[in-house]
Length: 537
Image (cartoon, rainbow, N blue to C red; front, side, top):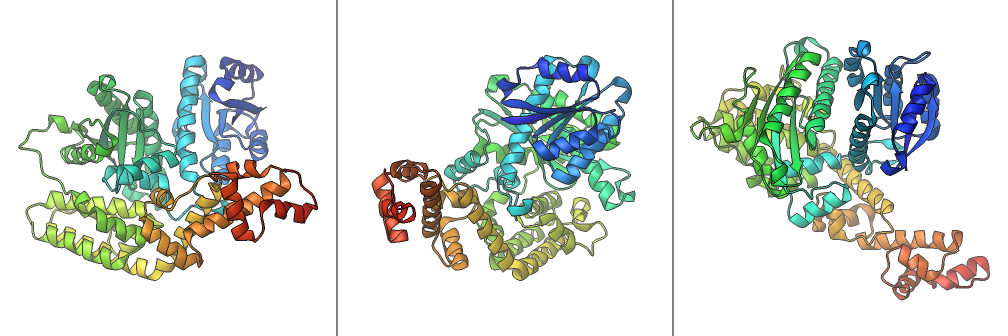
């Protein structure tokens, strides 16, 4: 069950929220209530709830202070839904800076609005848990955020096969069963960000993106993907073509542009691609969205590709043509392939001096991939472009193809230097992540192909890297871990041999006993009898 904590200094409000919904139908249990933020923080430490509904104004510690303290101590979870009065509405802007999920007006609160907010919280919780399922011990982030990597592969058509796509969808617990998708590409622009320090800039852009996600999700089901600090993509999905209404998308985007500007004084420009009927075609819609984006302006912030005339339609850089070498370079830290591929792309740009827009678009595509696919991508690329006055974001203002090619060469040389110096560390982290994944799924029937697909690696590369790093083969490692867990089950839970075999994913008790004896030198029965002196199975 998902745990929910209610925080409000008015007992009647607590009672009202408790009775407003049948919480069990949502898979939620109310783990406690508190009348101020200080008491709530203690309960969060004790109960570890996934969702907190809190009033903003309370004694001792208010709701915003509670959300801030929780964010600093616990990270993304628990999710916060804040209750506010009309006169407190200006505090919502501050609440969003703490990445509060939703806000509800007390006087307008009813079962429908509360249920809708809870559904959004559950959807967001599912996404967060999917991305955090691959964290290392001590809550240190993994080398890669696999949720982000999945969406980057989807946007850029980098999956080797539909099977690899299906495996990652299953493993990340995502749902791509709908029959209708389209994509938008957007930018967040601020006239004052240049005068802010790095921390305030990051807060401005992350708060804006949080609000973008919140507003859009109220209008239409979607996934919002951060590409870098100022660029984002949105994948919209509908169960059927009949449910898709272009005007709903336009109204949602225009409303989002207006509200985000009113709150944060930033401008949004967004291009929208055409609708597709298969998630594997999402990259096509995204490329159209990028073309439409190039025609946006502050006076026309939302442009649909379907409304662009052929005269204004420019061919875009298709990064999927370099899918195989780029995937190999980033996933296997292969500097030779990376250097060769980026040189080929740079020469392609330089050989077409009249196509500056396409060159910038192509360079940005590679930038987003590097930010997402490389360990510590943001930090790494920021360091590579430290000599540039505007850092790596100088690419967005270039109007000359040779400048773009030079920028790409700088990225190429910097990435190769970083990967050469840290290749062993990165590879060790990859194997540590794979081992962590295996240990967390040891009761499943794991295969090399499936685990490789989860991490976006080729099975041959993973097999060789695993053997070299661990000194033991992939299958042998899994077998040893399964038998180790089986021994604990036999001794601690007094399970029968066939029950342990079934729980550990072996095809039969006979095969389990055969593997057990090969690893331990004795049968499961002999193992139990040798430790307990007796055993009836």
